[in-house]
Image 1: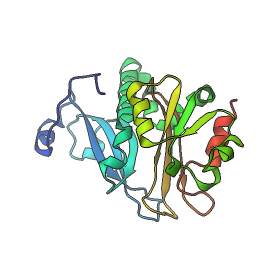
Image 2 (image 1 turned 60 degrees about the vertical axis):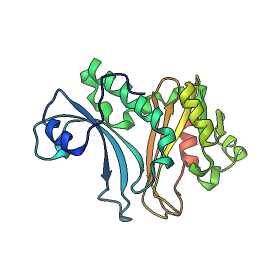
Image 3 (image 1 turned 90 degrees about the vertical axis):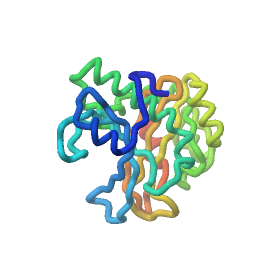
Length: 224
Protein backbone atom coordinates (compact mmCIF):
# COMPACT_ATOMS: atom_id res chain seq x y z
CA UNK A 1 0.00 0.00 0.00
CA UNK A 2 2.87 2.42 0.75
CA UNK A 3 4.32 3.78 -2.49
CA UNK A 4 5.17 7.39 -1.62
CA UNK A 5 8.78 6.63 -0.62
CA UNK A 6 11.10 3.63 -0.44
CA UNK A 7 10.67 1.77 2.85
CA UNK A 8 12.41 -0.76 5.07
CA UNK A 9 11.33 -2.83 8.05
CA UNK A 10 13.74 -2.14 10.91
CA UNK A 11 14.08 -3.25 14.52
CA UNK A 12 14.35 -1.12 17.64
CA UNK A 13 18.12 -1.02 17.55
CA UNK A 14 18.20 0.29 13.99
CA UNK A 15 15.50 2.83 14.83
CA UNK A 16 17.73 4.12 17.63
CA UNK A 17 20.55 4.64 15.15
CA UNK A 18 18.43 6.46 12.58
CA UNK A 19 15.81 8.38 14.51
CA UNK A 20 17.92 11.54 14.87
CA UNK A 21 18.25 11.92 11.09
CA UNK A 22 15.60 14.21 9.51
CA UNK A 23 16.13 12.48 6.16
CA UNK A 24 14.17 9.54 7.56
CA UNK A 25 10.55 9.24 8.54
CA UNK A 26 9.06 6.39 10.55
CA UNK A 27 5.73 4.61 10.80
CA UNK A 28 5.41 3.17 14.28
CA UNK A 29 2.90 1.97 16.82
CA UNK A 30 2.58 3.79 20.14
CA UNK A 31 0.40 3.27 23.19
CA UNK A 32 -1.61 6.34 24.14
CA UNK A 33 -3.70 7.33 27.14
CA UNK A 34 -5.74 10.46 27.83
CA UNK A 35 -5.49 12.48 31.02
CA UNK A 36 -9.25 13.05 31.20
CA UNK A 37 -10.06 9.37 30.67
CA UNK A 38 -10.75 7.98 34.14
CA UNK A 39 -11.29 4.48 32.74
CA UNK A 40 -7.55 4.05 32.21
CA UNK A 41 -8.09 2.86 28.64
CA UNK A 42 -4.95 2.47 26.53
CA UNK A 43 -5.06 2.76 22.74
CA UNK A 44 -2.69 1.86 19.94
CA UNK A 45 -2.04 4.78 17.59
CA UNK A 46 -0.22 4.40 14.29
CA UNK A 47 2.11 7.36 13.86
CA UNK A 48 4.08 8.85 11.01
CA UNK A 49 6.93 10.94 12.42
CA UNK A 50 10.06 12.59 11.05
CA UNK A 51 13.52 11.98 12.40
CA UNK A 52 14.95 14.67 14.67
CA UNK A 53 17.81 14.90 17.16
CA UNK A 54 15.71 14.98 20.32
CA UNK A 55 16.00 12.92 23.49
CA UNK A 56 12.30 12.10 23.82
CA UNK A 57 10.64 10.14 21.00
CA UNK A 58 7.46 12.05 21.78
CA UNK A 59 9.19 15.25 20.64
CA UNK A 60 9.83 13.95 17.12
CA UNK A 61 7.85 15.98 14.54
CA UNK A 62 4.50 14.30 14.01
CA UNK A 63 3.15 14.20 10.47
CA UNK A 64 0.09 12.10 11.22
CA UNK A 65 -1.36 10.03 14.05
CA UNK A 66 -4.39 7.76 13.67
CA UNK A 67 -6.20 5.75 16.38
CA UNK A 68 -5.79 2.09 15.46
CA UNK A 69 -7.09 -0.21 18.20
CA UNK A 70 -7.39 -0.81 21.94
CA UNK A 71 -4.00 -1.80 23.38
CA UNK A 72 -3.65 -5.55 23.64
CA UNK A 73 -5.98 -6.28 20.73
CA UNK A 74 -4.59 -8.75 18.20
CA UNK A 75 -3.67 -7.46 14.77
CA UNK A 76 -6.31 -9.71 13.23
CA UNK A 77 -8.92 -7.47 14.84
CA UNK A 78 -7.81 -4.39 12.93
CA UNK A 79 -5.57 -5.74 10.16
CA UNK A 80 -8.37 -5.76 7.59
CA UNK A 81 -8.47 -1.93 7.77
CA UNK A 82 -4.71 -1.34 7.64
CA UNK A 83 -4.70 -0.88 3.88
CA UNK A 84 -7.16 2.01 4.05
CA UNK A 85 -5.35 3.60 7.00
CA UNK A 86 -1.91 3.42 5.37
CA UNK A 87 -3.27 4.83 2.11
CA UNK A 88 -4.82 7.72 4.03
CA UNK A 89 -1.54 8.42 5.86
CA UNK A 90 0.32 8.38 2.55
CA UNK A 91 -2.10 10.83 0.94
CA UNK A 92 -1.92 13.00 4.05
CA UNK A 93 1.90 13.07 3.95
CA UNK A 94 1.90 13.93 0.24
CA UNK A 95 -0.45 16.83 0.91
CA UNK A 96 1.75 18.21 3.69
CA UNK A 97 4.82 17.99 1.45
CA UNK A 98 3.01 19.76 -1.39
CA UNK A 99 1.43 22.40 0.86
CA UNK A 100 3.45 22.86 4.07
CA UNK A 101 1.07 25.63 5.17
CA UNK A 102 -1.53 22.93 5.83
CA UNK A 103 0.32 21.31 8.70
CA UNK A 104 -2.85 21.87 10.72
CA UNK A 105 -4.22 18.84 8.92
CA UNK A 106 -2.29 16.68 11.35
CA UNK A 107 -5.37 17.19 13.52
CA UNK A 108 -7.79 14.73 11.95
CA UNK A 109 -10.83 16.89 12.70
CA UNK A 110 -9.59 19.17 9.90
CA UNK A 111 -10.90 16.59 7.44
CA UNK A 112 -14.48 17.22 8.51
CA UNK A 113 -14.53 19.80 5.75
CA UNK A 114 -15.23 16.75 3.57
CA UNK A 115 -18.47 15.79 5.36
CA UNK A 116 -20.75 17.30 2.66
CA UNK A 117 -19.35 14.81 0.14
CA UNK A 118 -20.34 11.73 2.17
CA UNK A 119 -24.02 11.88 1.22
CA UNK A 120 -23.14 10.90 -2.37
CA UNK A 121 -21.22 7.81 -1.28
CA UNK A 122 -22.02 4.39 0.18
CA UNK A 123 -20.97 3.94 3.82
CA UNK A 124 -19.89 0.43 4.86
CA UNK A 125 -20.06 -0.50 8.55
CA UNK A 126 -19.71 -3.65 10.64
CA UNK A 127 -22.60 -4.63 12.89
CA UNK A 128 -20.39 -4.63 15.99
CA UNK A 129 -19.29 -1.03 15.34
CA UNK A 130 -22.82 0.36 15.67
CA UNK A 131 -24.50 1.57 18.83
CA UNK A 132 -27.75 -0.28 19.69
CA UNK A 133 -29.95 2.65 18.65
CA UNK A 134 -28.87 2.29 15.01
CA UNK A 135 -28.06 -1.41 14.97
CA UNK A 136 -30.27 -2.32 12.01
CA UNK A 137 -30.87 -0.83 8.54
CA UNK A 138 -34.35 0.51 9.32
CA UNK A 139 -33.08 2.44 12.34
CA UNK A 140 -30.25 3.93 10.29
CA UNK A 141 -32.53 4.89 7.40
CA UNK A 142 -34.84 6.71 9.82
CA UNK A 143 -31.97 9.11 10.55
CA UNK A 144 -29.70 9.04 7.52
CA UNK A 145 -31.09 9.29 3.97
CA UNK A 146 -27.90 8.27 2.18
CA UNK A 147 -26.63 4.79 1.37
CA UNK A 148 -25.29 2.84 4.35
CA UNK A 149 -24.75 -0.93 4.44
CA UNK A 150 -23.88 -3.40 7.20
CA UNK A 151 -21.15 -5.71 5.86
CA UNK A 152 -18.69 -8.36 6.99
CA UNK A 153 -14.94 -7.88 7.44
CA UNK A 154 -14.40 -9.86 4.24
CA UNK A 155 -16.61 -7.49 2.26
CA UNK A 156 -14.79 -4.50 3.73
CA UNK A 157 -11.39 -5.97 2.82
CA UNK A 158 -12.54 -6.59 -0.76
CA UNK A 159 -13.84 -3.03 -1.01
CA UNK A 160 -10.50 -1.61 0.15
CA UNK A 161 -8.39 -3.92 -2.02
CA UNK A 162 -10.49 -3.30 -5.13
CA UNK A 163 -10.85 0.41 -4.37
CA UNK A 164 -14.57 0.33 -5.01
CA UNK A 165 -15.57 3.83 -6.22
CA UNK A 166 -17.73 6.19 -4.19
CA UNK A 167 -17.48 4.02 -1.06
CA UNK A 168 -16.27 4.89 2.44
CA UNK A 169 -15.52 2.47 5.27
CA UNK A 170 -16.06 3.05 8.97
CA UNK A 171 -12.96 2.77 11.14
CA UNK A 172 -14.17 2.67 14.74
CA UNK A 173 -11.85 2.36 17.73
CA UNK A 174 -13.07 1.90 21.29
CA UNK A 175 -12.24 -0.04 24.45
CA UNK A 176 -12.54 -3.82 24.31
CA UNK A 177 -15.53 -5.63 25.77
CA UNK A 178 -18.67 -4.03 27.15
CA UNK A 179 -16.99 -0.81 28.15
CA UNK A 180 -19.14 1.66 30.06
CA UNK A 181 -16.57 4.43 29.91
CA UNK A 182 -13.55 5.56 27.94
CA UNK A 183 -13.23 7.10 24.49
CA UNK A 184 -14.65 6.00 21.14
CA UNK A 185 -13.13 7.23 17.85
CA UNK A 186 -14.98 7.14 14.53
CA UNK A 187 -13.56 7.77 11.06
CA UNK A 188 -14.85 7.40 7.51
CA UNK A 189 -12.13 6.72 4.93
CA UNK A 190 -12.61 6.52 1.17
CA UNK A 191 -11.95 3.07 -0.28
CA UNK A 192 -11.04 4.45 -3.70
CA UNK A 193 -9.27 7.72 -2.85
CA UNK A 194 -7.97 7.23 0.74
CA UNK A 195 -9.53 10.55 1.79
CA UNK A 196 -10.78 10.94 5.35
CA UNK A 197 -14.33 12.22 5.13
CA UNK A 198 -15.29 12.24 8.79
CA UNK A 199 -13.60 12.21 12.17
CA UNK A 200 -15.21 12.37 15.58
CA UNK A 201 -14.81 10.99 19.08
CA UNK A 202 -16.94 10.84 22.20
CA UNK A 203 -16.74 9.81 25.82
CA UNK A 204 -18.57 6.57 26.46
CA UNK A 205 -21.37 6.69 29.02
CA UNK A 206 -24.91 5.45 29.51
CA UNK A 207 -26.29 7.76 26.85
CA UNK A 208 -23.39 7.40 24.41
CA UNK A 209 -22.26 3.78 24.05
CA UNK A 210 -19.16 2.39 22.37
CA UNK A 211 -20.00 2.68 18.68
CA UNK A 212 -21.24 4.90 15.87
CA UNK A 213 -24.02 7.03 17.35
CA UNK A 214 -27.29 8.44 16.00
CA UNK A 215 -25.64 11.84 16.50
CA UNK A 216 -22.95 10.90 13.97
CA UNK A 217 -25.54 10.00 11.34
CA UNK A 218 -27.49 13.18 12.07
CA UNK A 219 -24.34 15.22 11.50
CA UNK A 220 -23.72 13.49 8.18
CA UNK A 221 -27.37 13.93 7.17
CA UNK A 222 -27.25 17.72 7.49
CA UNK A 223 -25.79 17.95 4.00
CA UNK A 224 -28.36 15.89 2.11
